[in-house]
Image 1 (cartoon, rainbow, N blue to C red):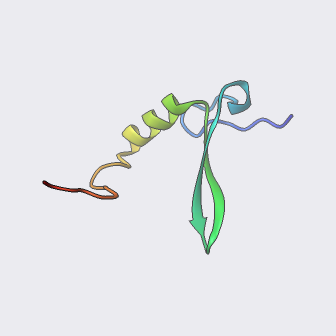
Image 2: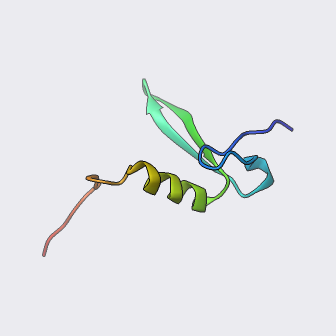
Length: 61
């Protein structure tokens, strides 16, 4: 079994319940990240400020 390092903590993701991130690259879904768990993914998002200034949709009543 190959070992894939978590993009946040560096641990082997196959030893956990991994989460993989994909993005569209030239119209094709491409894996762009691997994380041990949602905890590492959430920590990565927070640490890198990836959610700052982003929203998919905001509705006001």
